[in-house]
Image (cartoon, rainbow, N blue to C red; front, side, top):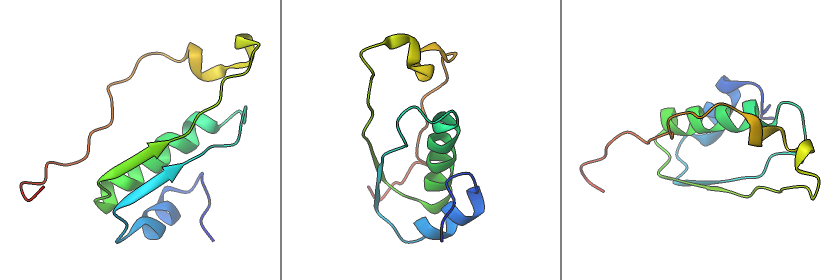
Length: 82
């Protein structure tokens, strides 16, 4: 069983995957950490595509992700064969 907060289990689950569809639990306090863990694990596993499905609440004050500091976008390692 993969745990969203455990980078090692995510990495093992993504081994050999070409793409990932990411849906985090709406308004979970650690949704951002879960998403970033998945992106890091996907990079380590060589995943080439990530699709993220997000939700905004009509009360934007509840949207924790909207107040996060800006980060550099995650980039997959360069693959000359791509």
